[in-house]
Length: 149
Image (cartoon, rainbow, N blue to C red; front, side, top):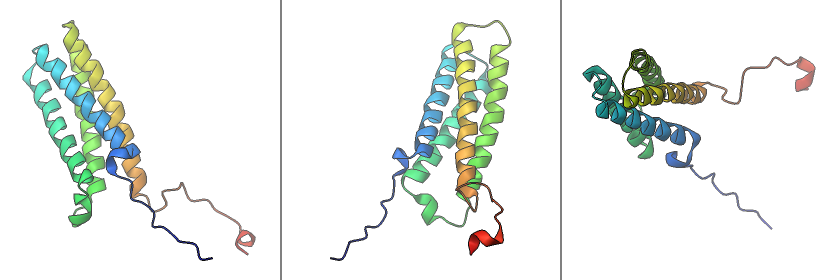
């Protein structure tokens, strides 16, 4: 009796680990921006957080509709890693600056959520970097010649 070989199903972006991390990053950035708006923080804090929300939302839409497969002239994972690193640097800067002076509770919450965004950005960059590797299962292991025979 012949067995049927089914094609491996494509896992939608929303249900993947990268999708969950990116959506968590978006939610934390929106929360941080909201706390900065409520606390009437300096405008650069709000603008940087708002810009990051826009860029993260762009990447989520890009991966959800699989536009990265259609527009293949750009190396999207590399752009996503660069965005994650820049996000981590900017959010770390504004979060530390928000936590240094004695300010309102909402500004401290915005800074704390900003630090959580930094952690999620680093995790997101690590997950995408793993996708860029030629051997995503792990590092190269040297084996003896007699193991191959």
